[in-house]
Image (cartoon, rainbow, N blue to C red; front, side):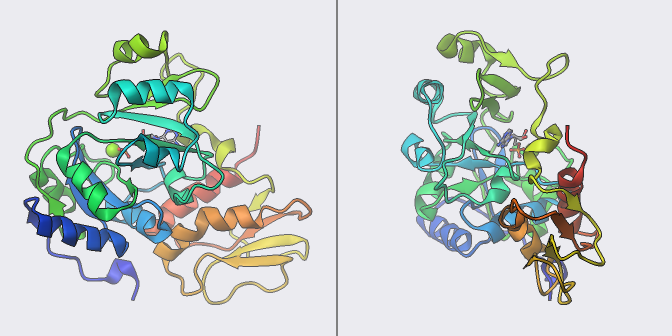
Length: 326
Ligand code: AMP
Ligand code: MG
């Protein structure tokens, strides 16, 4: 039975106690999602090192595309295990972590974080939250947690456990209740992976606070030539051309298959999900695109993926990957 047909969980709003942290950690270690408060808004957390758990976030939110996810850590040292920390990041961490600041940094080659959290980008957004419940949950789970805002896609960000329950209640096995969020505004996102720092999203830490540490900082947005990550088509694209909706395949093509009957005859074949399970396909998508992207082949043929549930986000990403390159 696919996840979409699985019975919804009854919502469980729980006060933080040693027992609830242990139960939450068990759920997270098993690849489930847990909603929890941070000082900004409530997050929908999952094990960032587990592809299936990251896919579960998109499934739970009903996101029609794979936006990159912010990954939460206990402290800077834990984040530095996964991303390249540069002097800007060190200075900002010293000034504003733990707190409502997210930094986009290059992934380390040996990062254990799911590629789904980066949505195929070579970067990862990292944050150390200040809220006691977020901190305690990270310690209990003993792993980084990917956590976008805990609302259904397209709905406003939740600042109380009741908001989460109203938006996602029957789809989340546990909501840790920390009352109302202190900041109530999302974290500021700053990109430190390029030649100069750029604010990608305004939030809990202001531009002038950032400038007090870094000197002048650019802001992406209207009038700026800095594109939001979803627009950076080329970043998501493998180097080989992509051919969608394939029903046949050439001998010099790689095949990205879906379902129990992969087309025969490709130079190399990987299957997103032999059972036709969309959550499994989402979890495998970026890893398999990388592994099929081999120089001597003519292209990657992709079998059709059903346009429903997580298939919508998978197809959105595949269409971007197949778009004409600049
Ligand atoms: P939310 O999912 O609501 O917490 O929002 C996350 C924000 O962080 C979105 O605006 C994303 O586009 C941004 N973001 C996350 N990861 C990256 C990344 N690797 N590069 C650029 N922006 C990112
Ligand atoms: Mg959001």
